[in-house]
Length: 225
Length: 225
Image (cartoon, rainbow over all chains, first blue to last red; front, side):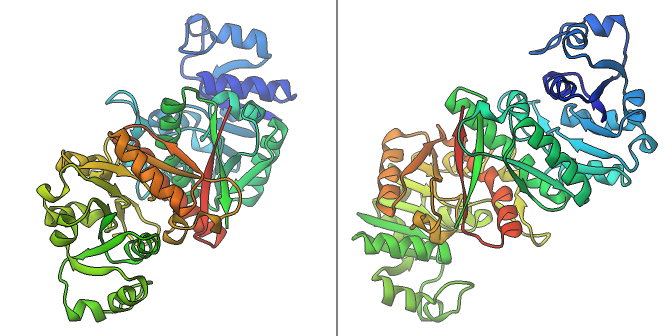
């Protein structure tokens, strides 16, 4: 499958590399492709030159990555997601599965971050993306765990869950298939895209677990009576 | 132990009855004690006349319930908590364990509720209570599950967690002891009272799980790598 990976940080690199390793054709979309960006050091992640060499993925503009893709991932910072997807263009996202991995985190007061007020409460980033791109098949997924865990849930032993939310059942089925290829066994359907409120709300909880437990290798399992 | 239970809804009644059954002396504090309030029908809960008859607890003013207590529970609606605790009075809360069970939920747009903006994001209800009553030993606890589960975690089979947060280790130890008496085995310490941000953030997630799963008997288990 042709995958457009919007975002070049650790999340985009990790998802992109894993998808490429599974045989997908991955194009990472960035704002300003070119030699300078390929060589630029990135926080907690490889340079894009290193990433392409290692993963076999390629790098292009956001518009090109989205236009050529069958499935698009949003792996940008949540505060920048709507602008990045605008650069992809409505036409290039129409009818496509758009996997929204981003979280609307506000780091303006340092650590720990909190949810961006305009993108939380009675809405969510997932819903705002769906509103802005009504013809895209938005599926919120993978946003509740660290990048390494997204593509290798066995890093956390025992049972734990991945959450998906979206309006289109077929799109959720495709994302579920991708998740199973990553090794996920327990995939919890949170219903329509308003379920993104639930999974994005986990972030402050997740960050706190990291702080008190000392490791980002943390997730949750839903228990029911 | 003498317990002041501020709040007369299903949470206050359930916690109060269980604590009384365990041998504690429970006084429920309400705004306007008197025959009318004792007989008034309550949403999803017994009348207070029924509650006192069944539990052996008694009903008094908020001020009286707090003044006579060694440990005080805040089981009011989150939006009303600061006002209810103001009625208890700073002096009556000073030096006492104050178990904050409330969640700052905004139902103004109907279901599902979201977190009250002024009591979430870079703060939490637990922290605002601690700020308003600096001499109280505030412990956020029990707020992440349904009332029935708070006092009987076996309603949900398997492993699942209760979260506590607070600045005072001794106060957290007392709340942990109460939780163990209720049957809780897995009690996760979220650190200081800022940990209330994490457990209050679970509410939108919890409500969604109830919506999609059809039962409020739902909780989570933290899994670590």
